[in-house]
Image (tube, rainbow, N blue to C red; front, side, top):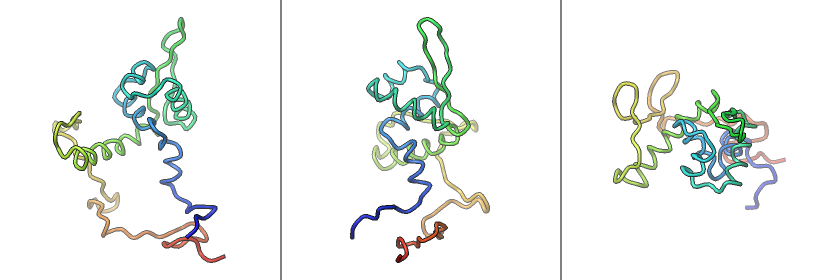
Length: 156
């Protein structure tokens, strides 16, 4: 089956267009950890300087990070998460948990995150209405985009 000219309208795809580039989520991880200076970001993400500059510019333009001058001479900036950036932190924690469980399988975990309750954080996605954990078998997708069904575009 040939690829369609216009893929399914999707908020996941829209989000990945902003944060799905290599290093973008690692930049957000570091900024959320308080490491918002360029040299810290280069060191802690492993991103080449030119690529890191492009990612930072894109994240600022998208409203995920803010850029603040912290030195006049030489002129240097640090980056901090906006509210939109902080709203992505649970996504980072869920990705971390998935990686710990499925890629590292519990061995040699590089970082633990402690919740304010004092326990190690184990993120769980729950339904905002009933509070139950989200499970695949409990979900029903209902396409809202005109011309689309669950299986793909409707015939033209």
